[in-house]
Every structure is written in structure tokens, then in C-alpha cells.
Amino acid sequence: MKTIAPFTFGVGDRFAHQACAQLAAFVTASTHGVEIVPVWNKSNREHTIIGSEPSGTREAADTAVTALAWEKEYYLDADHINLSTVDRFIAPCDFFTLDVADDIGQPAAPTDVQAFLQKHAELIGSIQIDGIDTPFIISQEEAERISNKFLLATQKAGAIYRHILAAKGPDFITEVSMDETDSPQTPPELLFILAALSDQEIPIQTIAPKFTGRFNKGVDYVGDVVQFEKEFNDDLAVIAHAVKAYGLPSTLKLSVHSGSDKFSIYPAIRRALQRTGAGLHIKTAGTNWLEELIGLAEADGEALALAKEIYAKALDYKDALCQPYATVIDIDDQKLPSAETVNSWTSAQYVNALRHIPSCPEYNPHFRQLLHVGFKIAAQLGARYTDALKTHRDIIAKNVTENLLDRHVRPLFL
Image (tube, rainbow, N blue to C red; front, side, top):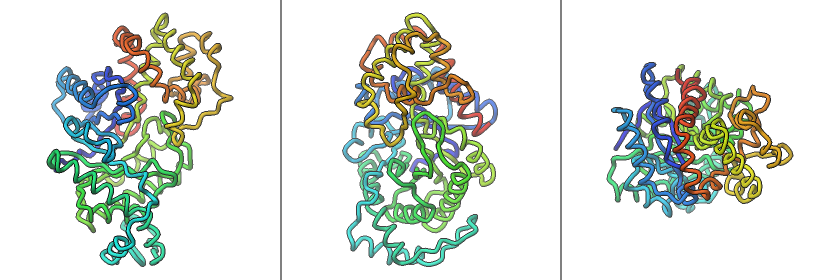
């Protein structure tokens, strides 16, 4: 099997024009002694909307690696795939995010639940985890509840993994994602999940649970940071325990999905990594596309007019654009500026409203979230949009690199 590096960072590049600018951030981090492996990701939904193929993402990543003479590791992630969508990703990808969130809460066969609990009698009773002060107290009834909630999802993960293995061989990274669901997984539930994934013989390298709080697209964490820090540290302890107890890979680490722009929890994550020496995967969820818009707005003139047009059309089609992302955005319609207002803005006003600097008085998270899900509008513009990216490549690249390096990589690792 392929094993994962300690620090990996997901980078979305929806229109496949910014791979060099993204990689430049990791080159700079490396010169400061921090090795972070880039993982280019793009979901099946995004490929479908844009009309692209995973092979195009691979080509863009490979071209950037050659151009910047990057001799270290890098991966291409088949992001949030399942059995119905995985096949188009098998050839170009070497990192597979198995999304089984839809199967959480669907009960497994009663005989499977009974067999699991008989095999794992150690999960019932008092369970002491190194690094967690209070033991988990798991009754028979609670063990049955947890098993019924998660066992089928782990079985589905096993089926997807074996499908990829049969087609590709073992040389790929496996992540299991359970974050796109209604309620967070508790540390005791994570222990059950990891035991079940071990039974499926998945050499899992990263696990993406749903944490407490809101992880909305492209904006800061909303929730109790103190509670998140406790949960994150407890999950690290559970992973360390499960690696020893169930023979899971020693490189297994937590993955924070929708991890972009979660500035308020970055200090807590950094403290945990420094304390434990644990690894981390952050998935950026595509803020790169917003940096393209920021660059166009900074370029002024026709480029700013294009950025304004994209917002106006996104506002017209707001409900349709937001529906697929309803669980990961919170937009207050009353705080969205009108198209007429935005059309009157200067370059600086558009940039300040969109760029994620919470201390800026003009920053508008509702404006930002709508544009985050509005990439479909840019895709419909076709060459008008991608030609603008080429024309204004330098100013866009500066924004892309600075966003990754200064707002994400630096506070976490440098």
C-alpha cells in the first residue's frame, strides 16, 4: 500500500489554471523546513458541473510539478466518491476519499451487528484511552446503537476500497469520509468506526469525521472552539489507541474537511499537533476559485465587470446554486448586496467584501458564500472566463499563493 506523509493539504483547482500558483506555497513552506504534500482534489459533482475530467486535473498537477521542479510527493484525490462515481477516477488518481456519509444511520444486517459485537467484546464496558482522562462507559445497548448507526457505512467503504484495489492494485491512499452528515461523531463512536474499518481490512490513511460546529464552505468555523479542541484531541487519542489495538496503519491521521478558512480553530489544531506529533490532512474545499475572482476584481476594467456579472447571475440563480450545498452554507439573504449595489463598487470594494479577512469592515461572509457556490456561473461562461484567467494570470497567481501560504499553511505549520 502507499503510505501518507504526516502533513498533507488539499488544494482545489476547479478550472485547472492555478496549480503552479498553489504549488508555489508548498515550495516556500519547504524552504522554511516544513514539508507539506499537496493533494489536488476535485469532486465528481464539480467535474460534472464544469464539464471536465479527472485526467485534466492530473495533467494540470503534473505540469505544475514539472514547471516548479517539485521532486517531492504529491497526490490526486478522487474526492467524495462512491461505487457509482469512482470508475472515472481510478486511472488518474492515487488518493481516494470514500464517502459513506449517506449510509450512516442505515442499519446493517442484525447478524452482522451481532457478529461485530461478539468479535469486539472489548468495546463494551469501561474503555480507558491514553490521553483521555475519563474512561468511555459503553453499555450493551449503546454498543448496539453505535453499531447499527455506523456498521453498514464501514461495509460500504470496504466495498468501494476492494473495487479500487481490484482495478488498480494497492498503490493508493485511502481516506474514509463521514463528515457530510447531520450530527457529529463522538470519540467513542470513532473508536467503533475504526474497529469496523479494520475488520474490512482497509489500510486507511486518513479519517474525516464530522466535528461539532459548522464547517461552512469558505468561511470561518462557527461553534465552540474550546469544545472543538477537546474533541479534536480526544479523536487523536482514539486514533492512536485504534492503531495499536486493531493493527491499523501507523500513518493514520485525522482529516478536517471543509478545512479552508477555519481560522479560529487553527491555533487549537496547531497546539494538538505540536503536543502529540500527530499528522494532519486539511481539505481546502476550493477557495482557490474565490481567489481567481479576487484577482479579476483587482485587475479592474473588464475583469472587474466580469466578476460583477458573475455575482449578478449568482444572485439570480441563488436557490438552485445553494441547494446542493445546503448543509454547508448559511446565507442571510438580507445581508446580500443587490446586483445594482455591486455594479457600483470599485475594485477595492469588491475585493474587500470577498477576501476573507474578518477584521476588514467591508468583508461580507454572505457575499463570499454565494460566490463560493457560484462557480457554475463561471463554468457556463466558458472561454470568456478561462480567457480572463489567462489574461490576468499573474495577479490571480499572487492571490492564490498568498491565500494558501499566509492564511492556511503559515498559521498551521510555520
